[in-house]
Length: 293
Image 1: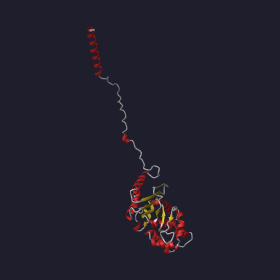
Image 2 (image 1 turned 60 degrees about the vertical axis):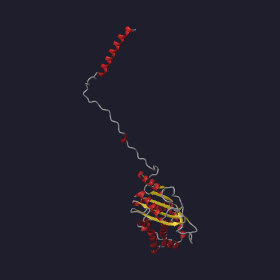
Image 3 (image 1 turned 45 degrees about the vertical axis):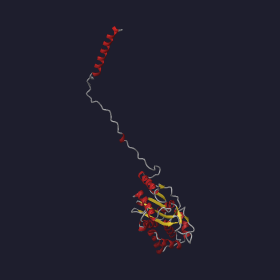
Image 4 (image 1 turned 180 degrees about the vertical axis):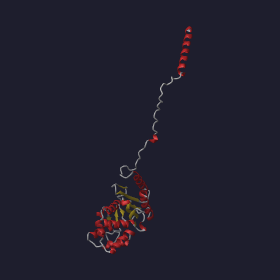
């Protein structure tokens, strides 16, 4: 076995030398005169556009508006009492309402808008003849939400007749409340839902005859300082209602916003003893600001 060891070692050395030559050998020079093509660089992952995720993809509103709606909804949930909200885009036909839009709430002075609609309707139909004094009182109801004007017209033209007509204007949930006044029904003690106010303002804008509509819309755009909150603004019109009722303050605002009154908004804040006038006014105004300003 010892005599075979030397030849084996020599063979191994020769093999290692051959392998070393192969590893250090230079590659043959290229005979091609064409430049070597480089592989395409991969597209960075950051360059791939990511589709925007909308907050309410099935709502029908544009994505940015969806964010505003969600923000308004979140804000309302932090405020005293409960807040019903209904938003409508009259151009596209889509609408959104929150979970409190069907809560029965004191109407306060928002019902004066329905009273004006009814008086103009009856006058146009020849059932009554509005005097200059009547029209002055109607303007006072819309401009400064004058309660005495509402009382006078309610008695002069029949409270029961008014109430019988309000359902036609979309106020199908309206209920006059007994036990609060010497006469029944009485405009100052009624309850409805935010959905009712939404249907009322859209009846005004879509169904009331043009001449009467122009009068109402013009008055809503020029309300006095006592109503310059809630839906009110430079591109808006409103009819507000506020009162301390059985159960606490209510602060309501209904109106329109934008060119050609594209959007309508109805807000009913039932504070339920958790706040008062100032808190409710701030709530209605901030909701409108979040949505549109």
